[in-house]
Each structure stands twice: as C-alpha cells, then as structure tokens.
Image (cartoon, rainbow over all chains, first blue to last red; front, top):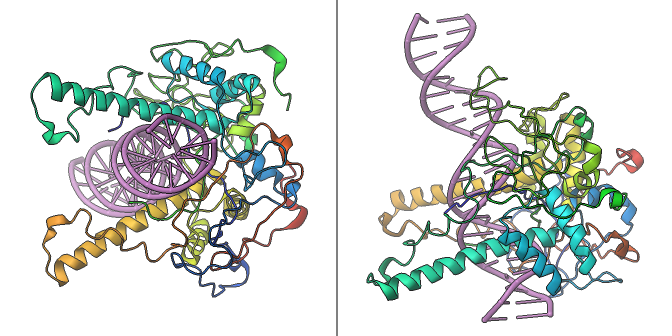
Length: 230
Length: 230
DNA sequence: GCAAATTAATGATTTATTCAAG
DNA sequence: CTTGAATAAATCATTAATTTGC
C-alpha cells in the first residue's frame, strides 16, 4: 500500500461557503458563551439558504484583512473567478508538462516546498501556475502512474501466465515499488515551516544532503538573485 | 466511503533528509554544505539528545534564502530542534484542547484557512501553536471520532440485535454521516489562495455569504489591528 | 519512590478515492 | 475520458501514561 514517501505536507485552506454549508464558525462561542448554535449536524441537503447549486466561491472583502492568512496559509477563499485570469482550473501547457515529466522521470516523486517553489517559478515562464498545481501534479501523476503499472501488470499476468483474475485485487501490489525511489522506507518528517513563531529559526542549519534518491538531478539552473524578491 | 466535505486543501512542504533518504533534490542543493545534525527520536522519557539511530531533521543553512518558500509554502526543512522552542511535535495545552473540542462540538469540521488562521491566533494565547496544528487536529479528531462511532455502532449491533459480524466491514458505513455537516454532497472547491500571482486579487469581491450552513457563528472577536503585524 | 521499558494517544505524513472541469 | 483538485483513510512517529524492576 504505502510506497515510499518523500515528504510533503497537507495543509488547509479555506474557502467560503459553497452553496449551502458554510463554515460552521467558531466561536461565537468562545466569548460569550455557548451559543446555542445548533450547528453541528447540519442536515445533508437541507434547505440551506440560498442556492441550489450555485457554487460560488468566495473571496474576501478586503484582502488586506486576510493578508496573513493568505500568506501563510495559502489562505483563502478566493477561487472564484478572479477578474484577471481566474480560470478555475490550471491547464498545463505542453512545455510545463514536459518539464514536469522530465523531473518525474528523473526520480522526483514528492517535491518539498522549496522544490515546488522552484519548479513553480520555472514553469511560470511557460504560463500561469501555482505551487499547488505542481504539488497536485506530482501527487496525481505518481498515483496514476502506479495505477497504470498495476493494471498493466495484472493484464500481463492474466494473459501470459495462468492465474485467472481471481484475486486481482491485491496480487500485484508491490510491483512498481521497486522502481522509483526506494531509498529508505521510513517516513521523513515533513514540516510546514514555521507559520507563526518564525523567530525560532535563528540558528537553523541545513543538512540538505540531497542525493539519496536515485537521481540527483538538479532542478533548475537556479538563477541566483532572480527571485520575486518578495 | 466519502462522508462530506467541507473544504480544505492539501499542500506541501518540505523537509530535509532524515537518516538515510533525503529529498531527491532538486538542485543538488542549493548551497551545499550539509550538516548532519542528529537528534530527535526521543522515546517517551528518553534522554534526548544523542542517539544511535538518531533521526535528525534538517534545516536550511540560511533561512533568508528560502524566505519565499517558507512564506508561501510553509516551506522548509526546519524541524530540527530549534534553539528557542523547537520541540518537534505540538503539544496542545488543556485550554487549547478545550477550545478545539468546543468548536468541534459546535459543528466545525474542516475549517478553512481563514478560520484556521483565527483559531490559531486565538489558541496562541494558550501556548505555541501553528495553523497546521489546528488543521491536523480537526482532521484527526474528525477521523477518529468517526472511527469511534463506527466501532461503537458495530458493537451495539452485534450485541443488541442479531447480525453476526459477517459483513462488519461496511455494514455501519453511513451511520455517522447523518450527523455532522452533511449539507450538500458535492465537493466544494477549496483553494489554496493564490500563491504566486497574487496580483489577480485586485477586484475580488467577497461573497462570503456565510450563513449558508446552519450556523453562522463568528469565529473569534476578531480583534482589529492586533495581528502580528506581519 | 524513581527511571527504564511498554503501551496508549494522538500529532504528522502519505496514499487512496472521489469529484468535477475541460 | 483525462486529469486537476480536494478529501478521507491508512500509516507512521513521537510524546504522555502506565507498568515494571530495582
């Protein structure tokens, strides 16, 4: 089941209220006292207020308000079609895909934030792209590549040799595992980076001994001081 | 299988190289140098510091370098015991838990980024905490609460009525689903917020029609200009 | 009574599934 | 039907309880 694991982190974001359910809302309570908010158990398709299917994403009124959030947490409900280029879903350009596949073939499986940052920056040259797109791309590609292999393996087995598709379910489980990164089997500790107490990062040292996987390809030329300056 | 879904987003982060395998690396390593800091892996009451199989986390050499990454992507490999308060894992204080549980009971299931931001800020009063901790807490709590219910339900069924544990596997599947948020069944679109092209956020309007759920309670008092100024 | 060993909880990460845009 | 996006389930790892030997 588990293959390997580079690292990566799951985060949260938040959105607004889709058609019906919205964020339960926290506290109200905190302060005052328990408000009988009966929220909890919202009914499934319950009446909701407003919309059958409208999906509307939400954005914040004043972005500045959420500045922090969006910065640190990739915050926010914006998703809606932003005036400028808001096309809901990312559409990778051929060039972008080319690069991504190259990296994948090179052995990259689950890039960490820094890597994603860099990849994103590089790919941004070929079109609009965000870090999450890169993240998702690797996740999906990895998973689907695996699926594909599994299916292929099953087919091979069932056709070339005997074994009827009796236990097709988990027979070829650890096949593809061999190829890919393999390295260590233990999970690494990922991190989100410090969100609030950034202060602690004083003496941090980097070990960064990359090169453990199969490949050690370099990401990109790593143009020196070219960053977005942020 | 799928229960409901508020929204939330998965993100990535990155870490360094644990004992043996390390990130494939992108760029060989940006700077170079890798310091083998070994530490971590403390057993419950274990001695700490120093260990054979030390798990060592890594951090970046110069944080400034990765500023961007850490900002946007919660970057970074730091995880090591940071001089200041770096105790690997978050340890919720009783007060923090109290608030979290209250919110959970209040119906909060998967807070979005904004909510998490606020909760985090609020909980920070009671001790060190980061957004990811809140995020994870809800994920885990939700999942484990579900598990608990399922197990309980199974037990109840098997003891009170008949039905032997024949199909215990998915018999009680949709039990707990009823209570919780239920709302719509379709998946909402979460978002990460724009990571790079923040520029687009110009005219964003907020729909923010909270109140679509059952409750519309407010998160926290939302103290005005009190933020960490960031 | 204390500290090492064991176990129980639970924080953090990864993988599998599902949903839906194009 | 492909695949980007999002969520839930499974898993791993670490810390706190608890037990055990002295």
